[in-house]
Amino acid sequence: MSNTTDKEQRLHNRTSFLANIARQLGRDKPLTEVKRPALRHTCQKEVMASFSQDELKDELVRYTETSLGAHAVVTTKAELEATLKQVCLDYCKDELGEALTGETILSASAELLELVSPQALETDQHSVHVWDAAAGFEANVTIAERAKVGIVLAEQALAESGTMVLYSQVNQGRAVSLLPEASVFVVAKSNLMPRLTQATALLHQKASQGERVPSCVNFISGPSSTADIELIKVVGVHGPVFATYVIIDDM
Image 1: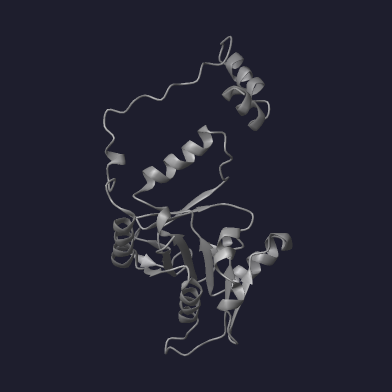
Image 2: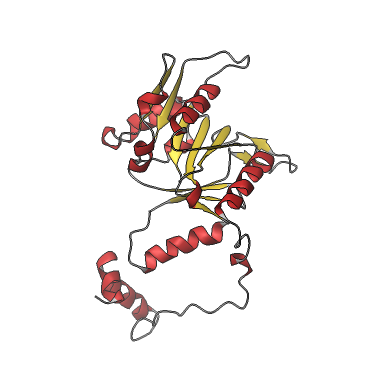
């Protein structure tokens, strides 16, 4: 099947739509597809290009702790549940360190639920709710608004900027990482990348091969913050006040 036919199936009325635009511009037919020019310099691909996954992990941890005001924890698949449970309980404390009743909302991503049992994170004072697409938008958002912690699985993590890449999907609503006071991002070491260049190249590759790409991609670098006023950084302006990156070292 030709590439043109693939596009026709994915984009409804593509040919007629472009033909109409061409007529309005006084052309007989749409222009041929533009060939991407070869760049003289590709320095954007050279940053950390020689880094191993362990070196990317070390850089991600360093940048996260020193520049983002967030935390990074390295764990294993076997210890992931215990690690996440402790992270959640640490966020569900008052200023004196006393335990408080708290809630966590957990992404329903199939990959995450294969690694983590919601029940394993619960205690008498800490409850866990799993995102339920069937329950509808309002029900899930109501829980996310009152939850102390939101846990999501990141598709990739970018070492250069401490950025987590989240693909929008029905079982992992954006509210899970945006509404709770603390966001916890789980990512496999094998999915660490140097920078935005590699993350967007992967999306371009998927699109070129006719794969369905997510309708929304979120790039989240630590807790919400701004430095708009006199270049003074303020954390917790328009989203989560805290963020923890949990890196699975043996994945």
